[in-house]
Image 1: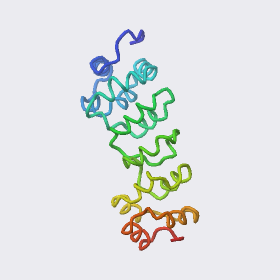
Image 2: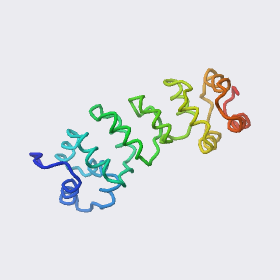
Image 3: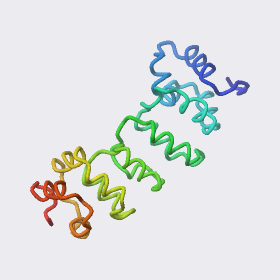
Image 4: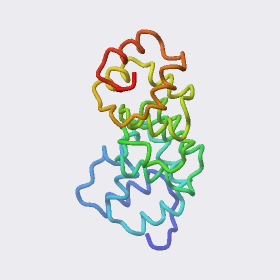
Length: 193
């Protein structure tokens, strides 16, 4: 392991994990490979994967069909990794199946729109507000707000921290569909509506 004289591929990574971790589950290797590596405590393997992060993501993480269940913490680490190419980050977002608590965990704001499109952040007014502060009321947040599932979640969440400025822009934009807008107005949501 120390010499890094092996190719980064699923066979080698799997063999190393099986040798180094006695109770490793095959499903973990296939469904959350990066998380499994990080949690393995195999320092040399972890350092090698981190040093070759683009190669790892392209040859393993994106190639394993089921590998879309990384822990939130490790998914955030991948998205915040400055060495990882933006294209690889976007491909990871396309595959990911869990929901992040909030946008503020992701440093690269260019990734916020794809996360919003895939509904990979918790449906809270706080996340909508944080997104709006940096990106405005753009087409991505409008599309997000117009989704019935998003609306159903938002009307149940705390909206007390929304600014009057946000609410006025929301009300005046004219792109929220009528039924959605009416539901927001009829709810206990924003006090400024």
